[in-house]
Length: 300
Length: 322
Image 1 (cartoon, rainbow over the protein chains, first blue to last red):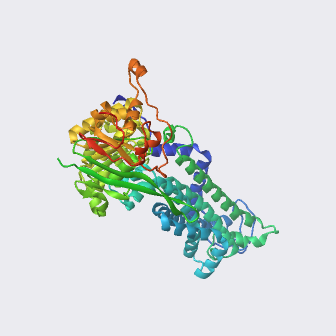
Image 2 (image 1 turned 90 degrees about the vertical axis):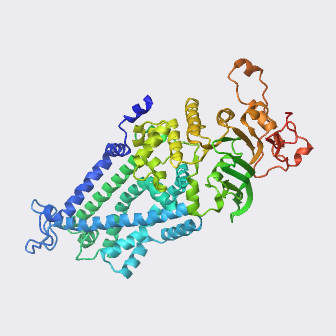
Image 3 (image 1 turned 180 degrees about the vertical axis):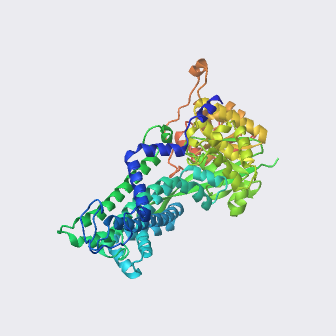
């Protein structure tokens, strides 16, 4: 038993190891901090923004970036940084909701299809095929035309289209999990399907789900921006990064073209940051990556 | 004494699907009519080579696999005819320990939560769960500190002890041990086998011990059944089987066990089986061992039945002379 106590003293707890690996991933850390900064700046806009929202200064008109207006002002003399921060609230919130809702739908479908197998699996997978072959943008534009363009319907429609990827990934994982002996072991001690799914299947999907949420946020920001740019997304007077781009798009070829760059830059930064976080999560949650986790490799 | 577990004419077939429409084209007979009885507090060894269906039998016993025909009777109750609720209750009485201690523990659960799970599922030791799992850990020779750890932090032997503790949590009468030590180092095997021995005496457990290693089975079993391609070819008390094997297959198996004495080992006569295991997809008519048997005659084209002479069951037309 001496060996047992020696092993017990090793400071190895799953959670702290995960944190170590994540921090070691420099880009992920940078992405995480950037994202945190963006969130605080956008949602703390009433505190941090240099000017009140929508404060017009018609006499000033559009001015280029200066110390007083870091990103300049638009035609109505509104401080552009302030506008971008408030628009960020809408963009980030939409993206996050879409990521969470679509992941929830995808996980539900994926788990049911993978775990039940048979006709349930077939049915769900043919439905995902259907979603994958129809061009998403066209579908989105049509759906939003019909449902109206409130943020709620945007989240709904984007989620209804975005769940297919995670559903496929989860289904694949569940198919392999289902055959693992610890699932059978749970059945032998008397657990039913519901208990097995909650206690053994979902926790083992945690990594995949976390990674997917991150990557879905990134793609949702882009899709929302695309839609808003095309005029199908967030409608003025509500602003998002996408429709700020759209409003500024008329300025190409004029001296005020910087108004187009700034929202684009914020989209770029947010998407890159979220992607880095996603990569970091994936690496940190995979026991085979990084060092000091030989034990995770023991099986097979 | 009435047996606690009885298996009657157990058959398990797996369909083989092929072609574009995935039609059933053939069946694999993994288990082909097996009958066994197990008495309280005794151990029945089930041996055979890889693919002979012994693990499938084990899975049928705990109803992880539903038999195609035949019955598993727990105190006279047919497991496959129980309702979900009754089955849950029956599961308390018959538990399974898996072969692979790496795959059979959920990597995301701590040992404590693995051991608490069966208690919660059956509402046992309510309010005293943590006390009970400490007891269980002690029972299988694990230190209390292991409870806070995760499976990947434990050695193979420790993991298998966790698997045994999980089975014991429900206070079963029967434990099916599916090659419980074959994934472990030889030095660790002995420890786990002795633990199983001890637990049997202390808790009056009945074991079905599935293995392919004859020396391990000899150590722990009261009675041994030898399986070949889904059928039992010989069944008798352990001592008799090792002293006086009647079936040629058993004889060949026993002759393959090395003897830890170089002088005897050198002079020992070994029987090398020729040929391969016939495909279970296409079993030959008659005795399934005839393709590898040095004694086979025309008589072997008919299936030998399992006959007893002084409680020594053997299915062979040409048994060794007793």
